[in-house]
Image (cartoon, rainbow, N blue to C red; front, top):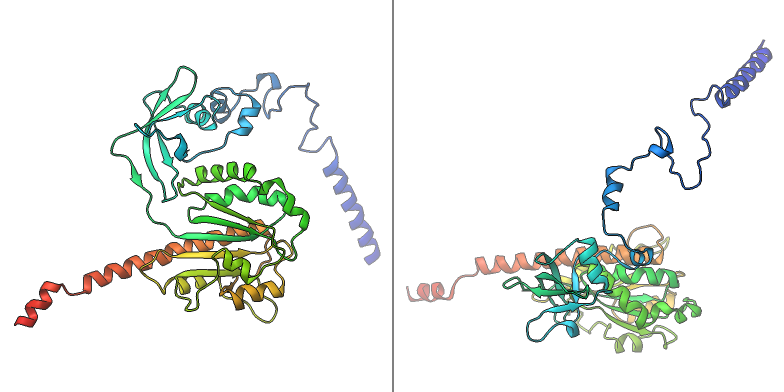
Length: 374
């Protein structure tokens, strides 16, 4: 009986499988091949297909060639270089083929009399304002700053990224992402012992390539502070001499208010502290200075033990971790900059609260003299 029950169960399973897979009884009817150029639609015939409102809205935008759509990018701030700014009226003239012109006219749909957000790039931090759009007869745009809208960018924390040259495709992806962080003011590209020598010849490390990508990231991040880039690939290994020449070595007292972070995932014996804790510990020593940090990220194969000793034991860096996961270089850079940026903001807010508390609780000079007289 037991064997007959097994055979009967198997037969039922086969029959059930055949019924479900049957094209006649299946709930999904076979799809017919559509004519060339027709669109697939879930109701009616393809010829009666009507686009959804979202697609209809996209088609209402000004038409442009596919090459122009690929070249344009989203801008949260129209950046103006110092050489483009008029010395008399601060007005800026943009050419018709400029990406900023295409963004203002096609993406933002601005016309004469409308306003846009403009940022003037400056080594001191730059400034932002509202500018009036004036369309020119040649198809270009003139931007005229509105009175009483110019304001200087506040003092923000600073981050220096020390990055061992990664895979070229990842380096090209990272340039605009790094530049979008408001706190990043310097990027130093070095060669690690485990870096692939062929990666040092990539075009992504040429100024003609990364300058445009940095401008794209700054525009998307809405920042006006420029990003300085140092390409140091002529040195074969990481050494104290190299880091000292770049100004990255800690002083003897370790009281400059800069958090030096050497990203390390640790091993089975010891795990470094989180990067956030290192920033709050190091930047809290100097409350009167704007907090800053230096973040070192290794190549795909990581830093060697000798390089780790140079960073930590010789140059004053602190080993820190982003968690227990083993991250790719591009993931480690983005997550590391995000965590360190948030920690620097937190440290600056703590310093501001401490400064205000001291001012409130400190006695006035006039009160002290009055009490002494009494």
